[in-house]
Length: 301
Image (spheres, one colour):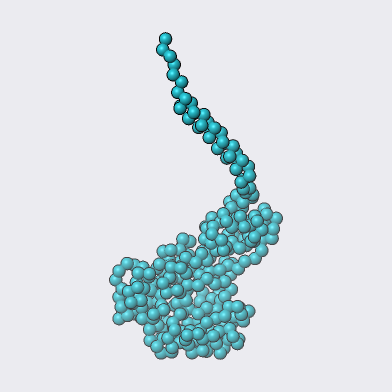
């Protein structure tokens, strides 16, 4: 009969792995007990009631994070201006809190210089992108500050809130706008700003040239004539770098008086005819504004 040889090395390895496995199991069990993070189940429920646009308009990155803040009492349901009022009220009722109030904010374009009123001095050929065109001598627009009209803002908008009109200008559908600020970030001319819908007085221009130099390139440019500032309550409008600037901290003073004598219609009044006080595209200019009659693009050059 052959003698059986006991392999002490293999046995030691088996014992070691067994002890190691048991030790790790004990450590994981203890860690699970003491490091467990409780998550309120209401977060999932509230998250389901949100629109899941993840636009960031509420001030936090994503609907899930917003749901966490709501459950923790760190914000109010109305802060989500993308959700319907009924949807926000449903969340408020579920959490037993007041819905609160929050004014809708939208993107506004500080330019009215479409191809029918603003000159293009050089024909750009290349990638169809404002970002790309802007690095080639500014994009060819006569007005250095003007919209290039290649639609980067419309392309980047995930909510289909921006369309390009026939004159190469972005038009914001305020009902669809979520104030996500993507258009603000992508515009190389810095022409978009996020505004409360009640800020109905708007300077649709960023040109910083003075008088004749301004309208030589764009017929609807601000000429820094100061008439809007003189006609408005004191301190509401200031001329900064040859451009009218509205102080929205004094929004109680906002008035159509500011637009009436503007010779180019660069400063306008936006009617609130849409949902949640939004503008449906109705733009009012003052009585002294020269009417725009041209229906076709100006020649290039």
